[in-house]
Length: 424
Ligand SMILES: *Cc1c(COP(=O)(O)O)cnc(C)c1O
Image (cartoon, rainbow, N blue to C red):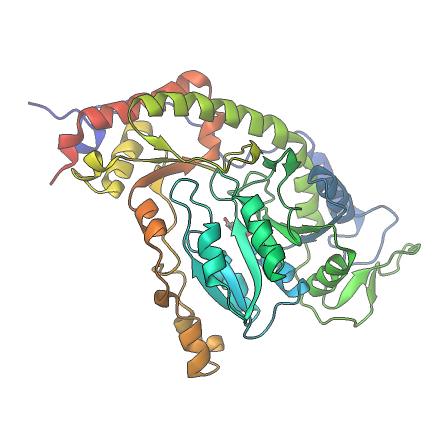
């Protein structure tokens, strides 16, 4: 009579140790010691005779993204807010925001006193739906943001076409997509600016961190000022003991600088990124073949994608299974079998406890503004359906050997074969 699934008291499918994240490389300790003894822990301390790690990382990451300019920032949220402001977005302006994303997609817009306009996503790529973007544009729209979500690249051709026709800057949020390519070109430089997060869960990380990349020197200079209290890095020769940041006062900013410790760790991690992305890609392809055989629908990406990277692996359950039990029960059953967290995707931003501007006094600038920023005024049926049918897990799992990846497929097969144990 006994139960078969681990969640109902049966044996787990595997006791394997899964890879953990983040993983230090070989250079980090030496570089961190170098920062520690250098006398300069951030670019807003005096120059000490060697190029800052922040400048080294900015150059290396611009190069990696095949962009000309990179302004590192303290977080990805800061990078997004700075990119928007550097593109001229401000108080009361509307910004088009994907409805299925981390809360930062909305909070960064709110943070510059603008209004997030949530739009629905494509049911197969989970990225913003270009038709929904176009339908959301009004005469108050000042920018379009796109997230390359989980493991997909959004339909950039269609989005760039819309941005161009309406004369709006497109800002790519690449927090999930370090190293992904579209038309053989790295994401981040298709629109006016690209933003990255280097928070601890991301494919390239220093615990906290971010960056804006752009080919537009005016956007870059504004981003520099915005992240360093209205200062920009001097372009002329600096001497030991002098400040490298110049107080131009051209544009007021805040302190959102990336510290030297973080930049040193990012230099170490950047060396590892391509090899890790390749390994994750191989594992994901292997898993997708196996899960397809089980009748599951793996997240797809836009046709223009030439290199896919996996921040989260995401796969959709068919209606027959969801009729037996809700998606979160499958998530818990798989977590119990495998020993790593399998989860739902983000909660849509129109119904997400983290996206609640009314809970924050700073947004109480009048009833009209409060009504405009109220997330529940938007409908996001495709995002809701994805949230209620898709399972996902983190990229570190894909760094496991292929026999471990087979165990993931076996766990899905086991849960599906015993799905009755999940029903009420
Ligand atoms: C992580 C993330 C961010 C914000 O990054 P932080 O570095 O945590 O501030 C922005 N957008 C998306 C889509 C993210 O996943």
